[in-house]
Image: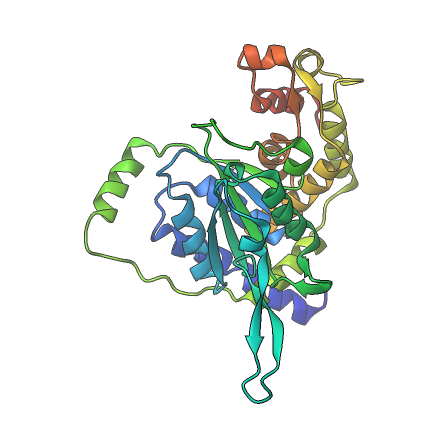
Length: 328
């Protein structure tokens, strides 16, 4: 990198702790989830967020958008939601000067920098597919015309782990499109006490804008330039390959898994490790980055067998065994 580029990037990276401080004005705790969402943004990916109701998923994403000076839209997914409701549709308009009528594309809520797809598993596969196509292509085609989505573009889809009746679970192939699968946990006792004190009064914190969309784009470019050693790439490759039952060095994987992660998991782990390095103001990946991110990267890319489900063996347990069995 040139000296001027290095100075520019260091200035941007130094703003990331300030960004987290702004989010913390509103969101108590959940630091791990916030870090993982920001990592997904820096790595130019999308994330799936799972948590019970009331854990401030919507507020977290909205607050982050405000601090990033990015447009934000929330879509509540329901069984009757159609692709046109999220992508947009053509409407008939009239030119007041000539009197001629024409169709104009009216952009849907998908045209925002940050889109919260709330309860994605409550809408039919047709609408899920429209969202996932936009995630992959970063554009929408309607009536033969291609419309580019804003950049940067981040979709955060949420799932409720309870009340599964009447839902449409995402197929494994579509789950694989998400860079990270983030799980939200309940706050601890002190955090919950702070939530009760801070949210039931009249005080509303002012969120300052820390980074612009252009600066986020620069940070995404920087993430790709972060150094990662060949040894760490080899470790990532071995980890991903070891998640596949056939030929895995782990008996745990062979016993409990139907199939493992594909090559996209390795790509995701490399990029996310680079993004975590940037988040920690480093320009080189360390083993801790990979160890930490193996869980959100792999947990939705490993399929457990029926016996594992019956015994309540989770993918996180498999990943823990993989990290113990495959050393850098």
